[in-house]
Amino acid sequence: MRFMGTYRPKLDEKGRLFLPAKFRDRLAEGVVVTQGQEHCLVVWPPDVFDVEADRAAERSMTDKAARGYQRMFFSGGDEVVPDKQGRVSISAGLREYAGLEKDVVVIGVRNRLEIWNPTTWEDYQAAEIQKFSDLDEGGD
Figure 1 (spheres, helix red, strand yellow):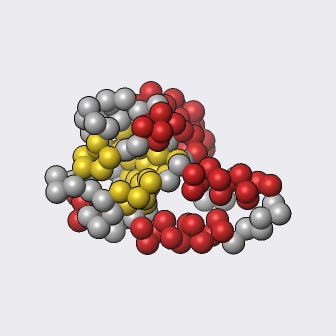
Figure 2 (cartoon, rainbow, N blue to C red):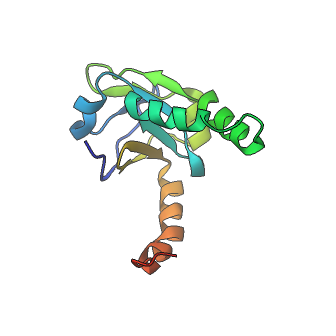
Figure 3 (cartoon, helix red, strand yellow):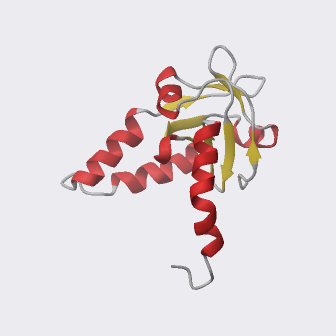
């Protein structure tokens, strides 16, 4: 299953998020939620997370950048099983990292979902839209 699209669910008072309905079957057994770049959160199906985790672990521990990436990637991670209504709990630490309050934006990014603060997402899109428009098949 490919994850695509933009959704605007809300966090409830307990920090739970309804996963988009079309993705719930794929994510019903559980997800891994981690810190992402640009202050978003990444929601990984466990099998996809394992591939990414293995890739991160392959880098040498003598590489300072690799150690830093691994620390950020794993330290904020949380394994979560959606409840029967398709909600996942987002920990307070992850909500704080991403600046999440009630309104959020969930985007599909092929093999994962990302959760964004709406203002952060709008700012990111505004900064990236021209770069996206300028790309061509030769791609620089």
